[in-house]
Length: 312
Image 1 (tube, rainbow, N blue to C red):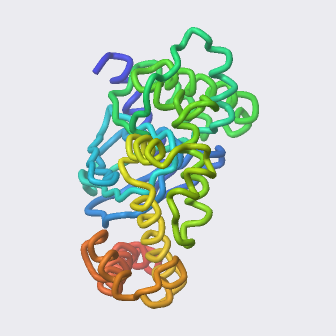
Image 2: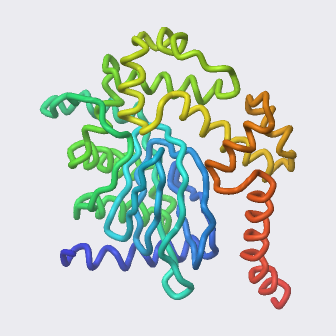
């Protein structure tokens, strides 16, 4: 760690800790910026990662994409260039040194606009995975710190946020994994066509999937769609759809109190037994057992906060 990073990291920890005082995910007044804190063991979380930059300043996290596992911690950043359904879990945190991180959503339109002015960058040659972990550079960490500082000076946000955001995009595009962003922003590329397929699957995940129809919709052959889709997402289109369905079913059971049968049917399963089998294979437990465990874990985490409020 350089002297500059030794100075930046404690300040980043301090800012995130002050604006994320309790465990959980915290949206901020800066559009696209969220802060995250965990003070101990955390349950497995299922979510769809959008194109984004995530930086851990304390602790570590495990992200499962398809059958691949990525682990990143302090001094690393996670770059996601396309919408990806994942399982994630904080794997290093304690009450004394909680897991602290920031995530900043990346705007594809702004990436395309900036890329048009960077003609010296080579075009990406092949489809590569839409998620990667890398060591953070001094320049990128400095820009991220200045983004966090805007939380303390909200009057500066309208004038300075666009400048800092453009610098962050520039650092990512010219960094070691910039080709992952460039491949999604190049409109006549096969990765961009995969992005269109992903967008369609997200909107129509509950419909029966015919691969030849999807391939025609994005102007690709079936074999090309399969090859490039798996290269970028680590999944086939059918596996991607299945993860979207299972994640939405879990959300429906947790947030809207649907039973397993209704949730499975609503996301497109005709067979409840098939839904239960695929759910257990993905999450490790049958639907209602998993939902019960998640609810108990949530109540256990909320109990100390409730006690503090009652004492106050």
